[in-house]
Image (tube, rainbow, N blue to C red; front, side):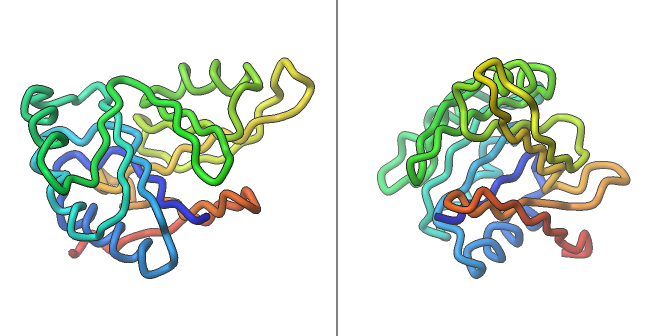
Length: 173
């Protein structure tokens, strides 16, 4: 199973939409958003892609009441998990949280096959040793919203192979 992992869209609807469209064309079967959506209306562009979306909030939460209303609409593909989430896809246990320090702590537990975070707007993949004697991939996909001088990025993850490809979207969209 391939999934699109992204974070920090910060209301940049065209970039978020373009990233998900591109990821779907590359075989993505689900979207994982690691927070900082900001306005819930930003997520409306995702339903047309007909992919399940798992989203958490970050430190720029926006209107949580409206987010709750949005995700409870009929035919909605978006699942809002709150401040963090444990999801299981393709038999893999995946933990989503916005903050890198929290993500590092969760990766070291050895309870997760993959831990994803955002916040820093910097792409990063590292293998962290865990207390069970193995290692856990910790992935930060950067900012799909291209916040500040950071490029607009997302990650395609192949969960069967546990391979991760970083992609950049043109900010001119």
